[in-house]
Length: 196
Image (cartoon, rainbow, N blue to C red; front, side, top):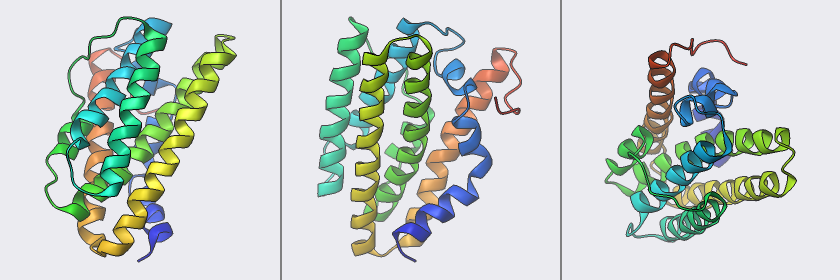
């Protein structure tokens, strides 16, 4: 397997989950139903904070780069938000934190980037809809960083070679994010299934 085949495999295996995580309902789930600028920025800041917290201290260039980038993302989003205090750690990062082998951690990172890219696309779209081009550009730029982090993880995986362990972890991270999304929407009385 190579890097592109790996991404294609994870995307195919988790097609439904990633499609729904890329829908407008994903922001509704992110904020617990509060579709205003403040809660959306707070939810985005939470994601960046826990991405940094989870991988900080893991050994390897890809992990160090991810931690540095996620910290920068947190600072950028928190600055947009104003006064931010992190909330509960999302299930996706609980699952990522459980990985203890290098290949599984790298695979988990790839899974996270697939979810994060979808989130940043929705965040960009939200602020475009709010006629806030400055903030929408911020999230567009952050989404570009996520693609660079995915490539760094894939490059490291190509050297490690344990694609099977990475595949299992990547799908586990995506599915944890999806289950969180699904359960949150159901609790809010919203049907999670239709894509909108």
